[in-house]
Length: 293
Figure 1 (cartoon, helix red, strand yellow):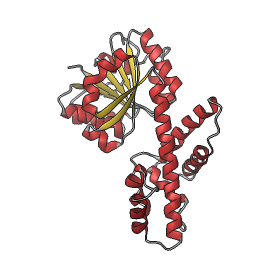
Figure 2: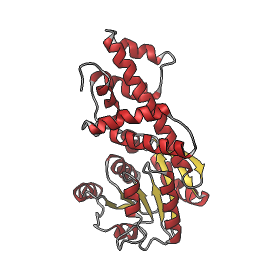
Figure 3: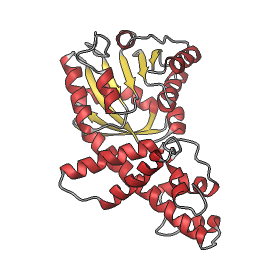
């Protein structure tokens, strides 16, 4: 079986690494800009935590990246730095799971190919629990050959995968998924806030919502947390703002006006400005309920 290394050992990356280790996959190395976090995970998994990206590439056949944004991807796949995942990358497969702009996925694929490697975007539409349990939903983009090569690992990490098409296409779909999810989250927060202001029982309102046109996936995942002010982070407000921005940019490129997406992004931007960016996206309710933040 291919040896696997991880770059980015936050909540998602760490739990994906744990899942592979549990299933007998040889996880050989982990890397994070936070060296202490990487070292702690390495001790848990019994693998290395080398300080250099090039050593990560050397330690594995497949490198899974789960980083925060376009800038981080540009850095780890630098063509100019002496320390880059591209050093000695011939024959390797990079599986890139971050939510970033489509154009960056396309550029990473170009750089990987120039180094003799393959690149596959595997955009995740799930959260921490699914990463740990191997029940992610993955939208994949890249060459069909890279997708086929990745299948054994993807089958362990995900309960469902969907091949979307060429590099960048899966990232486009992921941007749409998060745009709609974020709009639904903001709408739900306003609905529950109004119900609360009217003196309605929120548990009753949630049940009614679930049986009517107000039902949504977000109702299942976020409504109780909004009611109870439990905003432990599964998907942060800061990431919601970033991802809505990606979709809005794509909309502008396509000549579209997306007023709901823009209004939603402004709410998540406000959370970041108010120092609430590390809360779960359900924390948007703190901006709508009377008497809260």
